[in-house]
Length: 246
Image 1: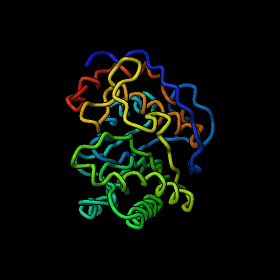
Image 2: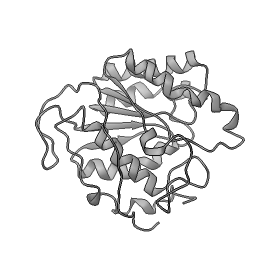
Image 3: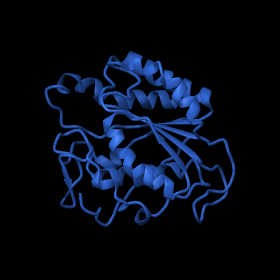
């Protein structure tokens, strides 16, 4: 992939849960207040692709970043989720993160009750680790035959996650609709934003999401100042083989 073009990424910020640790941000120009030192990302292969610019952006912002997003999984509800749960509590605890970001996955299938149970279980596990939990909505997909039978389930994930966030301390729903819109959009500003597979993101989309996410996290952690995108947008990550179909 070539260089990421000018990142005109208009992204608003919303509130988040109260952070627990005070101190100056490592990034230049950080203000006093709750700081952000470590972030853990959980999700599927969509999140794994977005983790590439996120790693660069958090590093440039003086924040340690770990991703356990995985291909064909990463979900806390739905197929194979019980296998994930065998390792997830230890992975979360060992990360010693201030913030855990769970991007709702394309495998979060199940009834409303099953989805609620999965998100509540995650909220309790993250709370036990001492971190805040941010539930980020998934980007809209263009389903193939594999996903089509599950679109009703996926369509309610944001609503269920929002219910869990409102009823749980230290949990916030991050609505990424302002990044992706309500429907799958292949190109933006004349450049590929989403993969031709209808599911994953292209470098531009991943970069837009990353800038939006960092700006969102700056609200509950005012001691954290996101690095300027010019510091991380063109550091080579966009050439990764994950960005196929772009």
